[in-house]
Image (cartoon, rainbow, N blue to C red; front, side, top):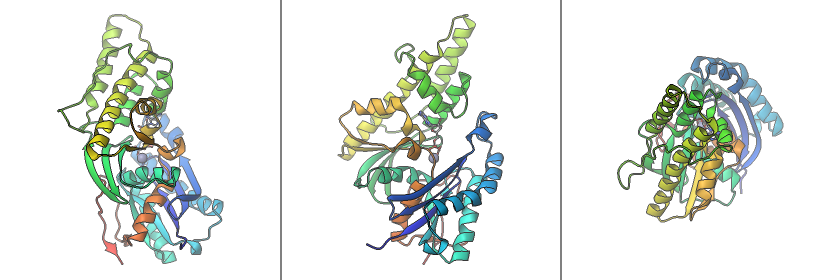
Length: 341
Ligand code: KG4
Ligand code: ZN
C-alpha cells in the first residue's frame, strides 16, 4: 500500500494544533497548544484573543509536529486544515497558513469539516472500526446524531434545537461559580453528588424525535439555584452537578440507543469534547450497544483527527484551491469550497 503522509492544522476554537498522520490512522505526531488558561480569566473563549494567539503560535506548533514525526516538508503528500465550523477569525489563521504552505510546497490542500474530524478520532483509536455506524457528536458547539453510512457519507438523524450539550455544561458550571471549561469540572463534582437528589427535567420533544433541546434544563438549574438562595437554603453543588449531568446523559443515551435501533445497528461511536464525560460513558455502557469512544486527548480538539478525516478526502481527490475560505457555520456532509483537480 502506498504511504500517504498528511500534515493537518486545526485552529477552529481555542486550541492551536498540528499533526502528521500516515494513512489516516497512524499518528506520527499530535501537537496541541491549548489557550484554555488564557481564556479562563474571561470565563469563556474570547474570539479576538483566540485569533491573535493562533497567529502567535501556529508556526511553532506546525514546526514541532514536523520535528516530532521526523518529517520534512518534501515528504508530505498533502496539507489538511479545518475550514469550519468554528470561530471565523480563528479558522482563518489555520486556513491562511495551510494555503500558504500548499502554494509554496505545491502540495494538495485538503479542507476538513471539524465535526467530521471529531467522528474520525474513533478511526485512530480503533484501527479496525469501519462504517456503517451511528455517531453521537457532543461538543461545545454541536449535538448531533448521525448515521455514518460510509467514509465521508453522513445522514443527520437529529440535532439540538437550541444549546449544544457542552454549552449547557459550561453555562451550568458558570452558574455554580466553577471555572472554564465547565464540562470537566461538573463531571468531577458530580462524582461526589447524588444524581437523584434534584429532579431536573428530561426533554425528549415529540415521540420518536431524535432532536435535542438543552436550554430548558439550563434554565431549570438556574431557577433551582435562585429559589434555594431566596429560601435561604444551603445548596449542595455536588448534588446539583450530579442531578444535572444525569438528566442530560440519560436523554443523550436513550436517543442514541433509539437511533441505533432505527438504523439497525448496535455500533455507537461517541465524538467531541462531551464524549469525555464519565456519566455519559457509564450510562451508555449499561445499554445493549457496541460502544466506541476516543481516549480523552482525542475527544477534545486536536489535529490528528483532522489528518484522519483528510486521508479519506485525499483518496477522493477532494482538494481545495487558494480561494478556500473559512465557513463558520459549515454543516456536516456539506462541502463549501471549489474542488480543484
Ligand atoms: O469538542 P470540543 O473540545 O470543542 C468543540 O468543538 O466545541 O468540546 C468542548 C466542550 C466544552 O463545552 C467542554 O465543557 C466539554 O466539551 N467537555 C466536557 C467534558 N470534557 C470536555 N463536558 C462534560 N464532561 C466532560 N468530561
Ligand atoms: Zn471540537
